[in-house]
Image (tube, rainbow over all chains, first blue to last red; front, side, top):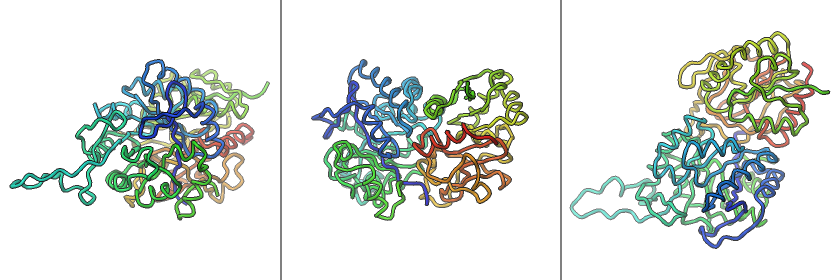
Length: 273
Length: 208
């Protein structure tokens, strides 16, 4: 067999507790992150992801402690993201026991941060987040030739990078940003549809595929998983190398083993035979 | 009582997770950058992630460390385990960024994974097979299974006899090298759940 499709449960963490946002609001407390991590390790998750959504400085300090305690009891790779804005932030998380750091808004404000962290600690530990929303294709101005932006990749679809939980548009084309992240030395891309996040309607497959097909590094599909078919779709139609989900695992709707089985049943390589 | 495992501290990123995994399976681990302690260790583990060049430089920057490792592993035949870049350092050289000399204990060089199929992604990230070479079926430590890989460069070993296991990522890539008292694994046993912990446990029992 070849490399397995990774199934990655993601825990949103704020001030030391696990929360899961639906469209990034309406947070619902659902437990202790270390205990959750241990359970996912025992269940055979391929990796684990913590996204810190603490607003406060105190919350971020708590995160380091959680990462440290998680790394002591879990023997699977741990990615930690949320608020990583400097080489120092990355170093603190890696020293605490994270295997990879996910970089989101800092890489929008200053893409070079990705290269700096990759140079210091290696591309293998740099996950660049691509948080995107669909936008209407630009309307060509009459009498002028259409710009490149209006003749995009997938049948007139366009995506833009959004920050602040999907509320703030940046005007940056998502595919351009994804390619830039890869060129700067990211080891993989975490592609999240901010339209789909929390909706349980499935990944944005066109977005995932457009990015996966235009970079040579692996893409993790994220945002919108509501059932096991969505995981399969993310790989088969979205061309993702890994599938990230939160609530379907978190609230016990499905187990990691069921996710692996769904992938295998679809003829995709997954663990746990 | 008991044996002492020297875990070489030369700034490698996965030092603590390897230490944690070894402790979990009962090893008395001493994290050290002291060549004297390496000379008296019962077993030696060399971690490593990131750039080959940075790792090779970091190791060589410790005065007397390479000599101590050679003395204890090459001459003294202490059981040795290299993990990821710690395994790749066994090669003659690595060609990441610029050519960098390795330890040269197992012939070969470390080169970039260059798949002919564009659908094959690099880095090679995730769980993949550890498929034993026929001559390694009875190796005391390495066993067939699934382990977690995370690398863009691979160990192209010159002598097939030194290859203990392969994995498949568009082409056969070396998953483990073994020679006498030395074992190097490309994957991360410290991140490979039950399979990885069992491998570390066997390493602690190994009498090559």
